[in-house]
Image (cartoon, rainbow, N blue to C red; front, top):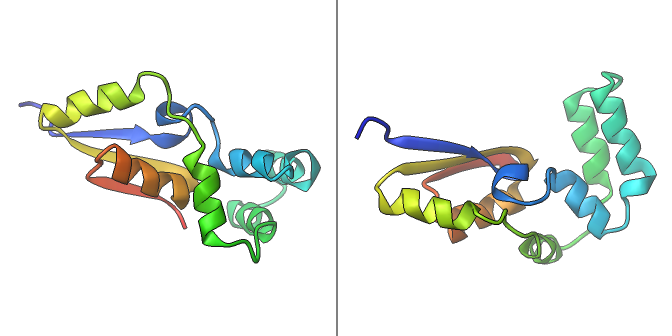
Length: 122
């Protein structure tokens, strides 16, 4: 076998939503307020990635981890992702998932889709 490892991005590739950050804000009805502006400021270079993450995560302060996991259990996989990933697993490939998104989705992908490695924001 020439290739041994396949690396996937999670947001917008394995999942239908392009951003786990935006997804959680939409579910909590926070997106159209400050969360959208934080993202715009980050993309415009007005704030750093670290500042963007801090401002975004401040909205979830005090929220139970179980609630966050529950919200991310609702996020759907892309239509063909689970089947394709199962075929790669069956063929003996090692699988890795990377994301600038949140760890809740990464943990789910690693567990449910049987990835060997998965890394994202905590």
